[in-house]
Each structure stands twice: as structure tokens, then as C-alpha cells.
View 1 (cartoon, rainbow, N blue to C red):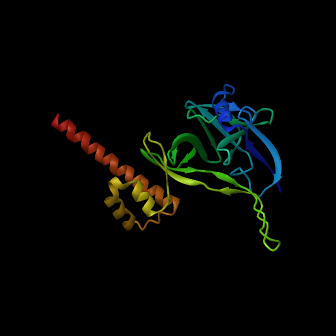
View 2: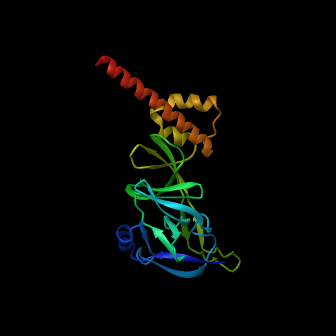
View 3: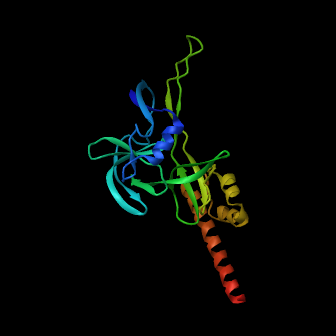
Length: 236
């Protein structure tokens, strides 16, 4: 199957354009974002789902535009069809959200190694501490066989999606969705969390169980904050 591959041209310049150029609805074109296209044989897709779904953009907390949308996990971009059925990309800004296919795509700050970046995330729970999912794909080049007996490995879009933890307004950090990873991220309440895990037989490799643990963690901290406020008021 032939798919379109987007190649970033002059990435630094393109990123700057994507942050500054666009119309009032927070939309840019591929050309404005410094992207060109070519056709090659490739396995998979850069999109989570190639089918456009009905959704809406929300700018500064207000609904602005209804449109058909899909998520480009390779370029970390929300793509929409405008009134002329032309594909455009939303500007990657914290003030712009996209809601479609039962998910909210919002731009948040996160750490990648020593770098701090901005990218799209799906928040999986409410509260001070949130479990985030970052849908992401990378392009893996074709590999030629070493000899005539080996199979040819075609180019492919590989899913490298990951989970992150975000506390308040801090930068999100990547975690492994398992007991060790979650307890390390939530280590200030480790003893209570271990009891909760054991009591409810949580399998923290499962997203729903991880969310339940974080919701409990938030409830513990809320109770602690209320006690501190009460004691402070009583002393005063």
C-alpha cells in the first residue's frame, strides 16, 4: 500500500513558522509548517486512525470550530479538514485543544531527556496528579537483507506511544506503566499506596488500574491538605 510520508524540511525554521503563522482559528498549512510530501511504499500509517472523526477545536476555553479531525502521531499534530475539504494542521499551542473520537488532545510541557518540549497528550484522569497518554509513532527506514536468503524489511511507522505523569503545572515525565514505575513517581505516599495495591489486587500494567491508584493518591493528598489548613486555622 502506498501512503503519504511527510518529511520535515528545515525543521527549526518549520517549527518556528508553525508557532507563529496561521489564521485566527489556530490553523496552519503543511507549507507554512515547513512540510513537503512524497510517495513511497510503507507499512502502517502515521495516523492513529486514518478516518476523520467529527470534533471541535477549543481555543482559550471556548469552542470555536467544528470539523472533521484525525491525529498525526508521527508529526505530533492534529489534522483537520477545512470548509474546502483541504487538510490543515492546528497550531501546537497550549491555548488550543481538539476534542474528537472520545478524547481531548491538549498541548502540555514535558521532559525528554534533558530537554523540555511541548506536545499533545490525552489526560486520563482529573485532579492535581494526572496520568497522561502520549500517542506517538516513529518512521523506521527499510533494511536491506545482508544476503539473498534474508527477508527484506520494508519501512514502517512504529508505535512508540508512552505514558507520563504530571503533577500540577510541572512538566510531565515519562513512566513505565507498572508497579515500580508508579510507586517511584508517587513515592511521597508509597506506604499507603502499597497497601491500596494489595487490598484491591491492582495490576498496574493495566491502564484502568493505574488510573484508580492515581485517583486514590489524589484523595490522600486532598485529605492531607485539608488537615493542614484546619490545623493552621485552629492555631491562628
